[in-house]
Image 1 (cartoon, rainbow over the protein chains, first blue to last red):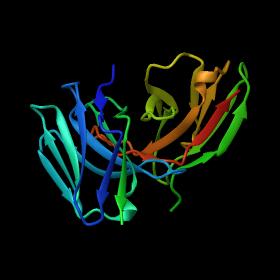
Image 2: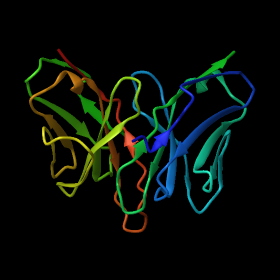
Image 3: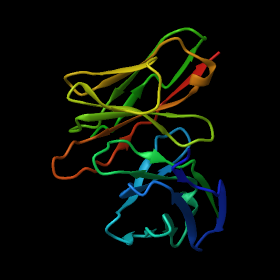
Image 4: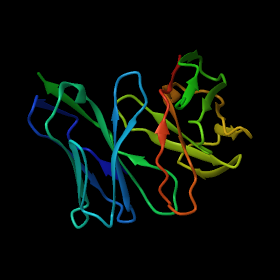
Length: 112
Length: 116
């Protein structure tokens, strides 16, 4: 049972435009969410996180939105840059546990 | 400041063999987690070590075992290798906090294991 889902395997966006990556989860016990970026031959790199007590968190060009009632979160990248081209993973965890549950990833390609 | 390092980078084994993968955590970190990432999938949690003990385990058989040393480095051992064990094995380190349940995990580059 996939508790964290990223239903779009890939996304192409023009440089300078907004990239929106989506993630859905099924476990209502999740209360902390993260986005990781992964380049080939490298490990995932932490990008941004959000606690369930918030509905938005910003860090520079990256903003994560959380809709708890819909069990949905999204990552917005504005403006998108060619260097943002990577695989993006959404992850979730619950208070008191130590494991991250990852989605299957979305490959973002930013076209110059 | 060295990040998380893993060795070896690549490994080829045959079915039935045993393998040991190694991880050195980021400086200052005391907790190590191991994940398996199969092709086209997200990382799946294997287990986490803290204070040299397995603190939590994912849905992996007993063939997967680990160890954490006093210097916080860790090993992942897999016995009786199966073809399905072919994957990228990721190590992540973090610093335990009594204040917060959420300890950001920093990942290493992984070890690519191929089982023939």
